[in-house]
Amino acid sequence: MLKLKYRKIIFLILIAIMAGVSMVSYSQSETNFLVKTVELVIFQQMATILIYLTCFSWDFLRSR
Image 1 (tube, rainbow, N blue to C red):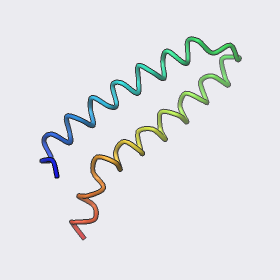
Image 2 (cartoon, rainbow, N blue to C red; image 1 turned 90 degrees about the vertical axis):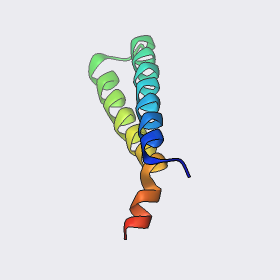
Image 3 (cartoon, rainbow, N blue to C red; image 1 turned 180 degrees about the vertical axis):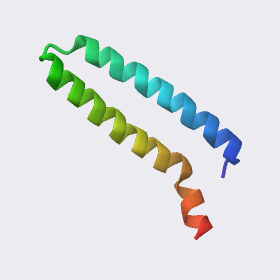
């Protein structure tokens, strides 16, 4: 298992990549502004939760 320091760095890198990809898809979308914004927010929230649990779920299980 990676040390917490390295998992934090990986988490931040993955969040930055996810933000870039989602903004590119946002600018390429042809739907109206409200639908694009809602889709972007939902996608970013779900992706952030997934990335967080992927990087730090071991800490949750071990702390209990």
